Image 1 (spheres, helix red, strand yellow):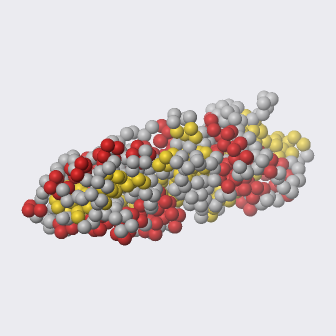
Image 2 (cartoon, rainbow, N blue to C red):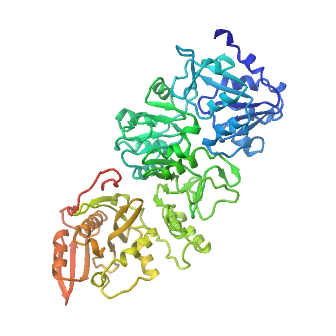
Image 3 (spheres, rainbow, N blue to C red):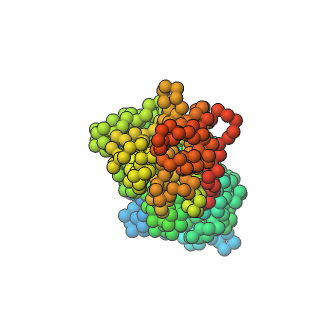
Length: 632
């Protein structure tokens, strides 16, 4: 084999004008070969350079070399972004799982492949190491394959190894591998991660990409159990979860016990960890990113980012207006795979603003020229630091309200007004609450009712109109009289909007939801409204007729009272038209004092100024897989 080693200059002398040259991906970019090719710029014309995101230098994108080289980006990174934006380089939109097929078919022609490998093993095979993705397809398709052989490249398991005969020329190229700096996540990313973590059950298989939010999500998963990983890439954040045993793949339905990926980017510590470690398997992108392969992982949770999301749920992640910024990558691959997975979820996670808070990322309509990477029919959850918007199966009106709720408060009024103008919501849609508090995530919990039902308990949102209306129509005449004090055959649109449009400050409501797969039925609501005349806050409670007597109402009330105590509210009061036995029983169960105020009418007063803590004794908090985390 030693006779096949040549210098970089000798190897790259084989490149000719008009050639299509593929360059290896990410931190596996063969920089020695790239520099040697660029050194021949004066001798070359019209060489196309093709690659995914690369972490190193891109001298071929220099405007001064435009007659010699033209870059074709399959994913735009910082090193070529200005060239693409200036029209000096091309961008080819594509799903990552299709790239190997495009290369093999010749639709993306490759004449020369420049790649980086490990040193030969005992059998003489070379490993593609930390990046297999579309590199293997380029090696198999190119008539000329040149490898930078680097003893510092780890040998990885999976489909990363190739026989020496797969390479035409070898260049000795020992050099430190490119590294991706790790930066601790900021407060905003940490809060987004906290919301994402609540959507990830035990035994889930997760996918996530590069950046502050994915790293923060990994940090937020340390209390999970038996997680698996099937992802196009991973970085250092995964190592802690492996060390703690949180990620073990023990309950994966596909390639159990294995971390499946196509590349990794991170520190030398990460590269040492994957070296000859059979917990990690690196496979080509046409396997890892194939939506049908992805879907074979039960409880698949895909987490991806975006630049903008409009109020109908359309996601733009590859451009800012008509200026191309990144690429499709594997976002759609994994979102569609997760959608087909048993109990799968797909999450778009992004900050609610950009440019130091001056621009909203939740927009009424995408910017002019912005491309749709993920369609509105594909989107499942959208998460910002303000909360979670669930979109799957929701109408445009419900989507708009859910997304406005997770937008930054500085932009909510404007978004609602634009939604009215566009006909996304009612012309008389209730104005967004002003000067309210953030969605109180600390009130999210779960309840196991007396008959064994596991219910999710959370504050109501503006997008819960349908659920609240359905609850109303479950009520008997007696329940309606007890709750509203008069016979009602329906609720007006204004009433329903009023009940769910909350500021979480002066107006608060908690609902108990029963999950039916991905659907949820509202079984009970407890709420307070502060009054401005010094009287106790008004409390209302209603429970679905079929589920009364199971402890749901008393649990909701205790939770509501506990939150009121934390908010500094001194007393709450409820008045009902109902049987004495029911009213006194409720008062006794929740620490209130009942008194008659008229024929068949009862008042319950709760004093919250005493030292006694109110605890939700009526039900048990649950940490079972799939349940929301217990109340903090």
